Amino acid sequence: MKYVYYIIAIMIVFSGLAAYGLFNTRVEISKPFLSINDRIISEDEFEKMSHAKTSHVMSREQFIESVITKQLLIQEAIRMDINKEESFRQSVENFYEQSLIKILLDRKWDSLVVDVTNDEIAKYEALIQNRLFFTKMIYPSLKDAQKRTNETIEKLEADFIDLSDDLKFMVLNLNIGESSKLKKTNFGIFVYMLDDIQKKEDPGKKEEFDIKRVSLFIQDKKKEQLLAQWTDTIRQTAEIWRKNE
Image (cartoon, rainbow, N blue to C red; front, side):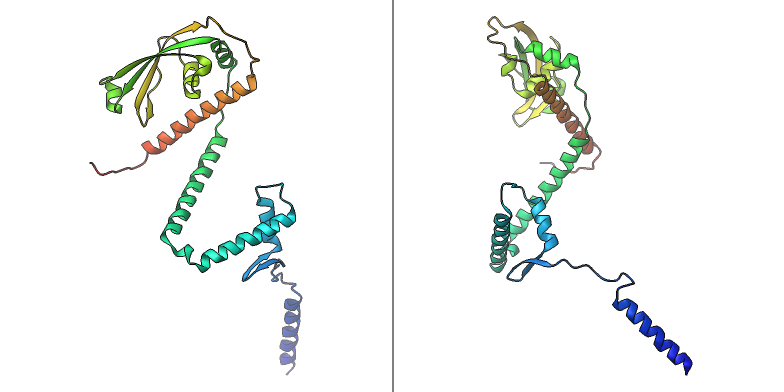
């Protein structure tokens, strides 16, 4: 009989331990902060929303009102079954894919490390006072560009400062008589040859040279170049099939 008492005593002890949570089985539940119809937002969830908000001008009370409005609109959209429509599914899918790509590219961009040399900055500063002359060769296809066939030739000239950012960066990597790499666009494939560089007859008022801005420009263009090369590598190592038309 005493064994029965031992068992009962042990059960009482273990029940007491469980009741006081000495086995660490209690779950911490955040207290409710907002209730909008059936939607309950806990204190923890609201604080996370508050930290993630994009506008820091909004007061706490204004933010609470915006959360309430947002939840009411979501509930109304669900009541109207908009969330079950195909157009909604497609928009969610598109947003998911775009967000996924953006995060990937942002992380890759941040991981890229490039150097900007003093020679590059000096060359940029010198080119500001110059006029450049180009030969632009346009090809209808990559095959034509590789074989240098069916080309359309244009002669161009412009002050360095008036060139697009892409052309400015291209010139930084060219000497007179050299040609650029193939540049693919929706309008064809271009190749530029730098024919000549001449000092402007009327350079005009010389503005203060912003080394920091120019250095950041060169750095970003180098990163764009590396990002494009990385994307090409992914494409080259992939198995891609398409129907011949």
